[in-house]
Length: 632
Ligand SMILES: Nc1ncnc2c1ncn2[C@@H]1O[C@H](COP(=O)(O)OP(=O)(O)OP(=O)(O)O)[C@@H](O)[C@H]1O
Image (cartoon, rainbow, N blue to C red; front, side, top):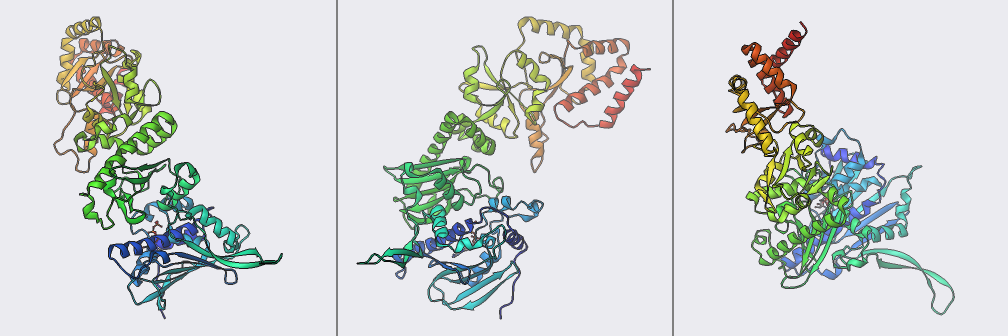
């Protein structure tokens, strides 16, 4: 007797979720199991072609469904590659081979819908409708067959068994009906026929089932019931069908099934190319980023088919890094069946396809931007960061390809805008594209630097992503306009008259400014009269070169900022603010006091910039001292 084995902890949790699922789309178990069966047949067929196996006949590869009302079972049988004992154990006793299923970080949420949606639970979905599942499998080329069985998620058993041919038979013992759930419906032939049509119509092997039909007897008016072994699916791959005949629901179901996403795709790109290299491609832009998208676990790539024969999953050469979120497949008659992963990189045809696919994705995204702004913004909010990294990476090698896809928040429009929109609105004498960075749009909008530029009716791009400034720096120019950080360097927005006035003020207050400079000599490179401020008393600006935002991003890097690179700090004082007069008074009365004021103002400017202050206690003490003095 086989020893009962426990499921791995995560698998057990998932199984419990499945068994107790209130998930409304329980019927998807059918598409999951059929999809596994089809994958297993794909694997065998591919092996037979690449290894020239004589005993595999394409014509006999199929999936058989059997319904048994008396036993309350559904059986799904395939004559694919089958599983060895180890594979049964590995594949059905464990989930998360990909590592994407991190229960530790997700065990606070008991929203099974999310879990089912996020992880594409495959085989385990059987437990949504069945409380006992049996799998009998024989691996192609092996003499031995094995029986796997699990009841109520209470571990599983594997025993040796007999099976003539290679492949897998999965038997589901349906749960008892409840007040809310009628599991018997899955024993009804019309239900299963409907589910196959709905979810698995494109599967390229026949899905067969005995179907009872009422037929008129020959030479008589009487009817008789006959049983016919019918193929339930049309078997035409979706990507080979005419675009105009395919419904949104068909695309959605296909995507959700094949790419294990609970959400329908945001956009479908279906293209067929004839010429020096011919191919069909069916590409999807997901509406949500997969949970592991920004981790090393996420593998980019498209499925590759050669004349309808599945060759490999996730051929990464077909998709550039900046579009790594795109899922889908490519089917080409110009590719050799024997193409290996190693050869992919060097295959000329494949490279030609990849180049065209990249262009196609870009043009479809631009089209979306033109025709459905809301959808494009949804895309941008999900994958915009990826595009911005794309601009920045490889020293800007792809910046031209990607620059028109970029969006940033606009101070003027209160929404995301493209660089092209910004530039087309610039007035003639505006030479630069203004931007400023910060944690959020709301915070940026309150920054002192923003006020004057807005008052001059100039548009500012608000950058909130770490990568933003780096991307703009690499971009350098857009339509011959350079980018200008409004909290950095000289803004050059003042009139000659204003400039003259500032020069005079600086001259008249030379001693005061020098005293402030002396007090802050270890912190700032300069203290100067500002031309950048309207209603705020002080601001910290950076000299040209590294900005504050870049300094902050560098400091967050895993290896920190070993060179200690910092933006050059300049403290700017608003000459039109009462504070300036107060400083003049303090300086006139008691020159020694100015150092404390300088330090407070510098700390305040740091806080506004989002920096930590070095000695908060001393800062607080100095403020307290001032309050006491003012009220003494
Ligand atoms: N009918 C089958 N024949 C052969 N192997 C199978 C069969 N069903 C499942 N397997 C194996 O078990 C593994 C796990 O299946 P499961 O459906 O849980 O996940 P998956 O198919 O890998 O991922 P997903 O369903 O998320 O695509 C499969 O990868 C496959 O190797």
